[in-house]
Length: 472
Picture (cartoon, helix red, strand yellow):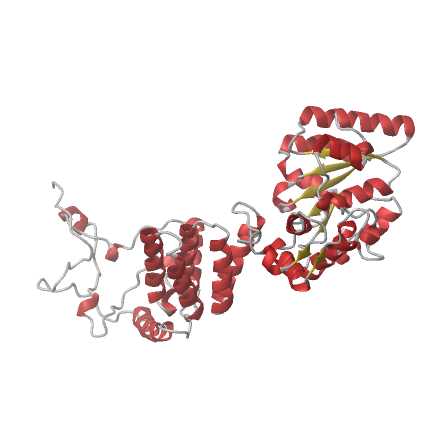
C-alpha cells in the first residue's frame, strides 16, 4: 500500500546519493514554496483560487492537466507540505483496483476515527481504466478523500465523467522561454541545491538555446544544463559547448493524444483560412515529429473536396498526386510534395458547397421515406418493364437545344430540394451560372407530351446500360 505523506519527504542527500547515486539537478531544484514556483501565473498567481485553497488548506478535488515538465508533480508536493490532511500518492502505472480499495477503506477509517481527510495524489490518472477510476468515486462523494489527479491527456476523454464533474480542472501551460531561462539562471546561482558552489557560468544565448530545446519542459532544460556543465569545476556554458548535446529538438507530439488532434486541426483551419505560411508550418510540425505522412496526405485529400470542391476541381488532383508521391518516394523526400499540396490548398479559392450538399442529401436519404425511382428515370430493357411504364416520359438531354430536358430527376416529395448551392468563388461562379440556367429549364412544366428519343440517337434511348431481355 502506498505510504502517506512520507512519500513526498526527500531523503537526506547523503542517503539518496549512497543508494542511487547523485540526485539529479532537476530534482534538487524543485520549488519548496509557492513563491519559488515559476510560471502558471493564471493558476497560481497571488490571489488566484487554487493558490488560496492551498494556502488556506481548503483544497477540493482537482485535475491538473498539462504537458510534461510544467510542474504538476511539484505542485502536488507543495500541496503535501502545506496541508494538515493525510497525504497519499498513487502512481497509475503501478497501482491496481485492490490497492485503490485498500486506500479508500483506510481513508474512510481515518476520517471516522480522527476526523481527518485524505488528499490522494494520482499521477498519470489517464492510465487508470474505468473500473479503477470508479473505485475513487464513493469516497470522493462521501468527502473522505480529496482527489488531486495529474494528466498529460485531455481529461474530457481520459477521466470518467462522474469523477470529472466532481473535480475542478486546472490547465498548466508549457513554460515560456523566459520562465525556463529564469529557472536555469536560478539553478546556476543556487549554492545549496544548484550549481553555484561549482562556479558554473553560462552565456545568455546558451540559456536561450537550452530553453528553446526544452520546448516548455523544465525537467528537460535542467537536465540539459547539468549535462552541459558536467566535468571540471568553473565550466562556462556556451552555444558551442551545447552543439553536441542539441542535435535535434524533440517536438512535443503524441500521435494518439491531444497534441495530434490539435495540430491536424491547426493545419486544416490554416488551409481553410487561406494562410499558406501557417499551413506549411503546422505541416512541418507534424512531419518532423514523426507523424505518418500518409495520414497527412489523407487529410489533405479530404480537405480538397470538403473545403475547395468545385471552386477549383484541380485541388483534388493535386492532393491525390501528393499522396501518390509520398507513397512512391517515402520520407523525407515526400515532404515537399505534401508542402506543395498544402500550399496549393491554402491558396486555392474555397467552397464547402459539395460538403454541404452531400450532408444534406445524406440526411434526407436517412430520414425521409425511401421513395421509388420515378418511372421516367428507370431503364426498360424488357417488354414487361416497358408495359409497366419504365422509361416512359424520359427525355434524352443531348437532343435538347440547351442540353437539359424539361424533366425532374428527384422524387416527387423532394422535387424542389436544392442540395448543391455553388458559391461565387473560383470556378463555381461559372458552374453557378450554368446551373441556374439548367434549373430554370427543369422547373418548367412541359406543355406538350414527352417525346421519346429517336431510334438513331447516339447512346441509350432510356439512359443507362441495357440488360439482356428477361424471358417473357
